Amino acid sequence: GENVEQHPSTLSVQEGDSAVIKCTYSDSASNYFPWYKQELGKRPQLIIDIRSNVGEKKDQRIAVTLNKTAKHFSLHITETQPEDSAVYFCAASRRAGFGNEKLTFGTGTRLTIIP
Amino acid sequence: KAGVTQTPRYLIKTRGQQVTLSCSPISGHRSVSWYQQTPGQGLQFLFEYFSETQRNKGNFPGRFSGRQFSNSRSEMNVSTLELGDSALYLCASSWGTSGTFIETQYFGPGTRLLVL
Image 1 (cartoon, helix red, strand yellow):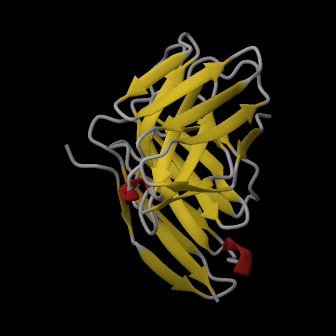
Image 2 (spheres, chains in turn blue, orange):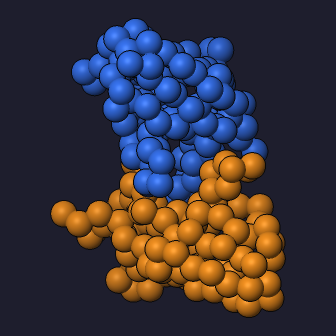
């Protein structure tokens, strides 16, 4: 089955600097890659996702890049702010016929923004 | 539009008991997936339901089961609880329609289960 590895497990960044989190996946058929942000005691919230038919997607300060050949994708947060402090999870999935709504998650990155 | 809701939010049970958790998806969503979140194992897929049918199942023992009703609401049941079942149980809903890519999943707040 799919295996998703996520690095680093913890990341501390000075406010205003950029943060990058990287994930690799094993299943070459995976074609959907979401990123979730989970604040302490709260539900995972989708912040951005990318499908395999594009190589990059951006939404304000957040961007995701996908390298299908190398089977890795990355989350980039620019101009970090204290409210960006949270645990970030990457995930991967493929559609094997109709259905199979299953996400395989990375182990998470605890991002701390230092004021 | 209301988000995914889960009840109860917190539960304390003892070993050997059973528990039922409930999830109400976003209106119009027909797919409900369940995940277990623990500090040691992270987020792990339990199963997914669409139109009252289980379409996909993760690597969990048979003590974990679920079902989905005609209104897309879903329940999961854990029988003969073990200490290791203590976790945050999250459900996520999506449209679940056919296509090349799976649909975006939106998570509920979770049910925190503590087994003593």
